Amino acid sequence: MPAPKPASTIAQALDAFLVDQKPRLSPKTYARYDSIIDLYKSYLERYWPGHDGEYDAVTKAGGTYCGTFGPEEIPQGSPCSLTTSCPARSSPATRP
Image (cartoon, rainbow, N blue to C red; front, side):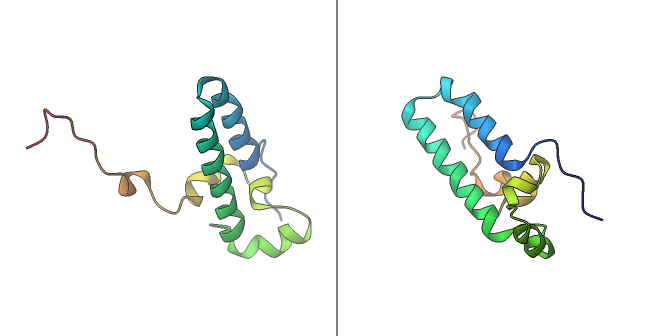
């Protein structure tokens, strides 16, 4: 039995995020956000994290990863956690 279709998809959630951010960002920063999200969507479409066995069925029906699964799948699709890939910031008061 196929999983129920989510209320919104990854593509819709990421597109809505960009729409929400555009008014508050400079054009240069917005372009960076757009580029990063485009790269992330490309990653998801190539690797189908957490859904290895579903690729053939979904794509044969004309679907895509970002157009099929809901935004709750975004953390699962991340290649690494932000806590492990971002260096901790230290303030002058906490530096040795």
